[in-house]
Length: 337
Picture 1 (cartoon, one colour):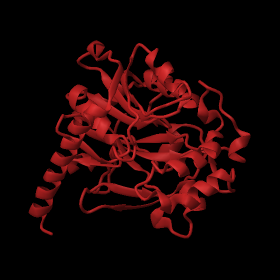
Picture 2 (picture 1 turned 90 degrees about the vertical axis):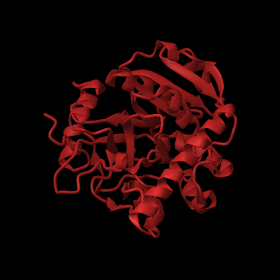
Picture 3 (picture 1 turned 180 degrees about the vertical axis):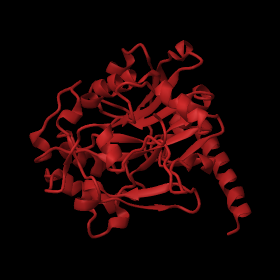
Picture 4 (picture 1 turned 180 degrees about the horizontal axis):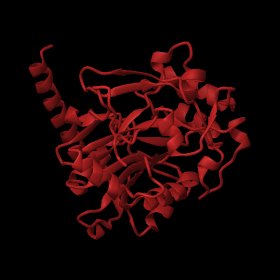
């Protein structure tokens, strides 16, 4: 396929994704619209959530500390108090839907519509509820400083590795109470078992590895979840995510890692998937089949989680901070000093 034909097909694909988002706006019901309070320079956070009461307090507090000015969240039929908690937050605009998460491209149709309406011209952070962004100097420099640095480098997006965090022992042995920092319990990660390749069509990095590849997909590593994401983007209403936040169009936004031997500034998404609740939620997720395109292929993965595994191994590394992640090559300052 010639580059011209591929570029044409990708433009058509982006238009179809935008059209899908417009069509699915009718699936959303507004519970709390506080978007009038958004300032011109505010950094916005978008997320789809379901039954995240254990995580939501820390998720909001962490990203507020980084400098997020407003959260726009779609609640997908929670029944554990998540929706009520979000509705009470003054910096959260909230929509709800009972429609299929899977059929909405795993929530991206809903979020694309909200970003079309509210994200244009803003730096937008698009996350799952079990992801917390960290980046070089994140304890002392706000997101606004990072976004200013990216813009001065001529960049409109930043990549991040989703880093699976896990406890030292069986998952059920480390419960996390509501509002608690989940990474007090989930303080271990795999430091070096990652493989990557660049996809020709979208030109994004396809990264696989970590404890899920090591334990659950050891015999079929190509089926392991991909870990590379592009969560931070200076948004334009014509942009669209293609596959979760792993890739987006136009594809130049996926050029978040250097190809000339140098480095570009990047971050890490600390992933709190493996709380104690993962054991009980695995059976529900297997039944609902809403989290993978070919859900039946992942039945073994859900069964392994239901068995309450111990993900720790002698090669596990305890998290100490962002400088450690940079030294391991999992994030980069890329010249930001």
